[in-house]
Image (cartoon, rainbow, N blue to C red; front, side):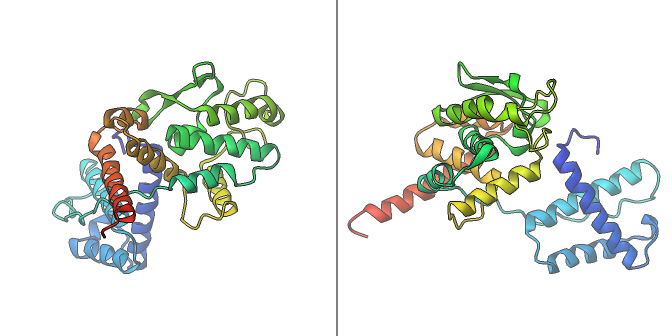
Amino acid sequence: MERGLAQNTIISYRYDLIKYISFLKKRKVNSFNQTNKVLVNNYFAYLRGKDLEINSISRNLVAVKMFYRFLLMEGLIKEDITSLIEFPRVSKKLPHALSLREINLLLDKANFKGKLGLRDQAILELLYATGMRVSELIYLKINDLNMENRMLKCLGKGSKERIIPFGDKAYQSLNLYLDKVRPKLVKNSDENTLFLNSRGGRLSRQGVFYLVKLYAQKAKIEKKITPHTLRHTLATHLIENGADLRSVQEMLGHSDISTTQIYTHVSRKWISEEYYRAFPRT
């Protein structure tokens, strides 16, 4: 895995390979030289039988193909048996976004209590205001914030740095967290991480996923919501309100504008729904 892959991608690939090796062991295959195309195809038939999403099956195939390529380069196998196996066709799903009513429910009505509640409110406000990925948020440091200009510095995929603005609500929540909460959480005066857990260490990805789910339930939002939903929601709302596509691309840290363009389809869907809801002769 030498291609500058994101840490989360590497973890996913490792997990995918463990599943593949477990599949081989159950079939008494103890060497990769004993594998063949039929066996690999059987593995993907096995994955399809588990009702996995096509994206997940495709990622499994990428992991296995990369692994066989590595084994061949290292001289550990004589042939890359995956070279002619085709990828399953991955359809581009429209990302799920919250409506303005739902995002207001989440951020205004979720009942943030106590010092951790105020921290959580700041996290949710910032996720929506900036569209940051979870991995970017948890590695934010205090000196990445420019509170005076309401901007922050973010290190994204491929170690690309970008500057992102944030609005009044996020500013107010952050100010409250920095003034009233973080000083009570910090255990080490040298700790520069912005968002801390109850033990004074860096908040984990799992911790952020948990709190997003928790407050969505408190706000009685029935949709399945993850931190990435807030990223999708920001992008959709910006484009619905006329934001320039290139600006949204820059803000989200997309290397390819085609990734950002998917939100124009979401926006068109919203426009269509609004039209048929409001037009009197439908």
